[in-house]
Length: 298
Image 1 (cartoon, rainbow, N blue to C red):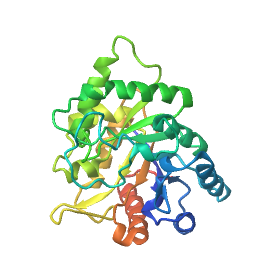
Image 2: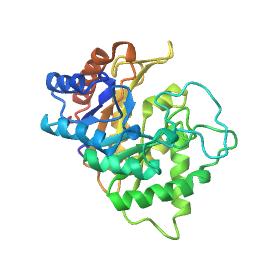
Image 3: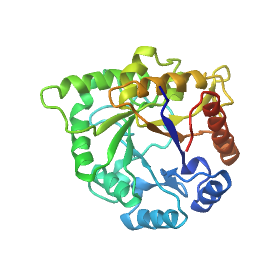
Image 4: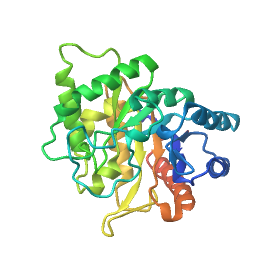
């Protein structure tokens, strides 16, 4: 059984803040896909459609595609809930969105970018959270997904209610039970598995959790950790056993009912002190590890 190939992408602002820096990096590193989140420090969800359109046209001219709008949707407190506090990277205040409905605006932005995926969260973590709290919210996103033909990718993020792979698996179990009587057409909601995030919480994924989620996975985020120093390092430089983790995930994906052939692998370096160099090392690290386990990177 051959393992799915990895379609390499890099989150643009992990290279540098400007489009010029992102474009020059892609040329140097032979990267043809950028997942977009911020440009010049401004989140795309806070931009007008004209502003987003200018970004899309510039990248298209350079021959760079945008598979995923790395949106901050639901990376804010749930209505009527107080978050547990702590530092939140790339948080977003929905009141700063230029449109009345930030959910619909996010899908408009994705459409303008030509992205067929949109990353979302699960609200900032609050006491008493239960997975079924999110069902109504994600039913709305599933409706938008159908309207725009854009897949919703739910990422596990430590500051949010779905933080670990365990919590991601629990949510998808709850979701499956909630829609069992009236299944959604197609697969609008998918798990965006971030194994590095789960390791950062001291909760590496189990075989059972990977086996459950892998058949639904079409996008993963890649980062690495020095678990002793408790800091993020370039991919391949840390002590997360990435060769084993990727082999386990890709084997489970290939063995699922749909026999997954390709998964997008998006570099989310998280090393802002040396962003461009760390991201270059991460790209090289992924290519090296993939070669070790016999997986094609395209």
